[in-house]
Image (cartoon, rainbow, N blue to C red; front, side, top):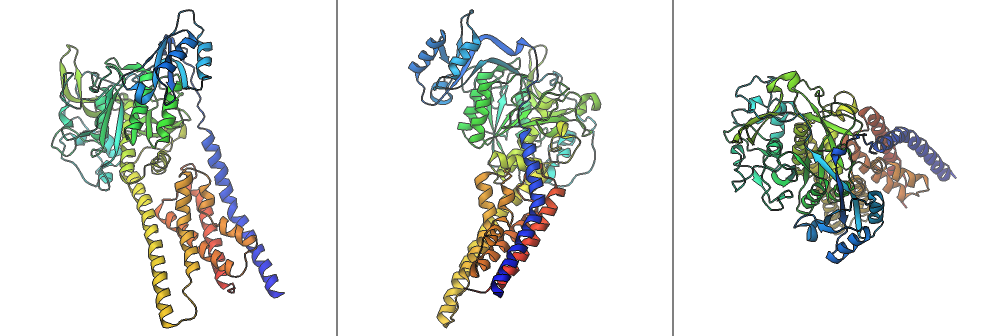
Length: 603
């Protein structure tokens, strides 16, 4: 009678404590869900026919579509489809067609989209380098640095590094003490890169030590993606320009490798089909990160499909938000698979040209010469033709969200180099480690912080490995003690099942995070004592209560560990004020369950 009454009292106590602990959890969950819902794209209304190529339709075909099937699709709309590039038929499956002048484009698109062989179909869109970014004049040496605040960490010997106020803002020197991006591959989808001496130009002088992997030129349809504009090389320089080589300036993730993919012509414009194809090509050739400093006010189904494909293959996609100076994030930045980046100047405030909107995920230095003069731009090496057509290899100060985006792509490479590779996890580390700044629709989570991101990524990855080896050690110790007790004739064996329950509680949150992703709100359940608590309330008996007590101890240890190290996987939309009471209540209930469980009699 007493045992039954005690059991009922324990259940009621556990139920009340669980209800109390779930209040902040539920609030955080709802808040996370509301924030995630804002990923829906809100397209601006450009009213500009210059962003569409008249009379052309593009299709993204499903794998296995052959020439005969492509011809049949053409007959269905009264046009002739051709593969977009030499790699389209066997690799990326992108095709194009010019439709008759009297064709009803809307009907043709509906026909194609309804066909089981077509993954996406759209009119041909034009994408461009955001405006107001470039200059034809090399930046003069020794310009006054907007920020002269002393920094700490590893400093490269590049003579013009002092002029890179942007790297100081993101705490690059501290980040380099942790990682420099080794092992990461960043695809630069742009105007190409001055990556080697070839018939089209020469390797930029401060890229001598930069590592490259094979790329492709979707404009000239060959494997020589050389930059004939200067924009792509400048972007690549921010990511991985040769560093500590006694020349020029530094790159933020200078041990990462660059994959040059040319989709924009010398004038800085390109087609949506080339961009979609380049995204898929990068994903299929092992890129970890994609940077796209280009855009359009119009969405495109092929590019959207390509972003979904790359994201699904584990690629983090970083995009410039645009240089409109007003609200309305462009594409592809506005897609939920992409990280939209706004720009700040030397003061840390939003650049006068930066586009903003609710899709902004994070901000980064992109320059602002209106506020800081020529020194207020982003300084990198590039190769550019002057007004007389002479190729000039020098250091240029550009400004724009195109310059902000590669800062975030480079930090993403630093995160990847530390073992965090899933795009959702990379995004979480980027946003959680950002320096808080202003309204979210202008700065997102804040200004990117390379040092904080590198440390958070390191802790997150290494702590998971450490917990795994702790479990191995516990089980090894359990088996060893069990054998020793058996030899000495001790009647009661070592508590193997208790150790197993403790280890399960310690590792279960890691397993659930790996399975559902770091940004899932279900992590709140996986990291709480809700699971053992629910089992206890449902009627655990005697020895089962002891096992649940050990499990609760493991979960509490895991939760406390992550709180101390700042590595809890909840998305950045859950603030510390919301998280702290939830952690405290879970630790309290977990401790109570452990005590109650261990006090329960054995079977």
